[in-house]
Amino acid sequence: MTNRSVILLGGPDSGKSNYIGRLWPALDAKAGLVIATSQPRDIGYVLDTADHLFQGRFAPRTEHNEERRDFEVPVALCDGTHASSIVIPDISGELWQTAVRESEITEDWMDELKAARGALLFIRVGSDQDVRPLDWVTSRKLLAKVGQDDDRDKIPTQVMICELVRYLELTMGSRDDSKPRLSVIVAAWDRVDPKTFDEGPRAYLGREYPLIAGRLLDTTKLDVSYFGLSVVGGDLTDDPEFREQYLENSLDQHGWVAINDPKTGLWSKDRDLTRPIAWAIGA
Image (tube, rainbow, N blue to C red; front, side, top):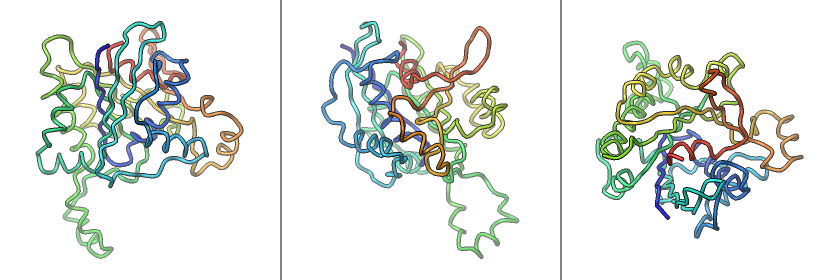
């Protein structure tokens, strides 16, 4: 058995925790590309997150908790090959922000990055934690009036994500064997309109986050693939009709990943939420 560490990156409210909470039921159901071959040793926080989803609620943000919440599970492909142990260190968005702001990362995090065989990078559609650069000449006085002048110290989301990609290039990108893989996941993909869905996550990033899109296009050290993600297939918070429908069915009947057919170039929904993991570990 081989340890294939998969590290999760993303800012606050980028969708990491809800994905992990939804991932375990998908692995345990043994219906996707990647299946769990035995029970993990310690998945308390994963089960807590999954419990929120079972009850029709997204998990509350836990980003300010600095406790390491690693998730390790023995897995294999559905045909029994490529047995490995996936280790997913769930490092909070705020901690990533601090690392970028101070241009310093702790030794244990650096060890995790060096050991990683793949990574999942999360960006969420419509997150209220998204930080956009402002024109400070015209905006600072207004922000001061409403008590938000401290926002000038926040790192723009695009800058932070680009720096996280740099960390991956400096660590995973230094391997001599195969090029490490990066799954770029645009979460809350159910919120986009049909035209945006058909264009795909990569085109969406090009419009909304051109700095990130350009950085990913420019990398020669990482093998990048794009996914849209909806952990439950709709909005549990602001769509009562969907929530009622959701509660009438089991969790495994909800959620999907948007994938691209390389032959046709078309995007479609796939119920297998393990696909970004399968890509990241090279399976």
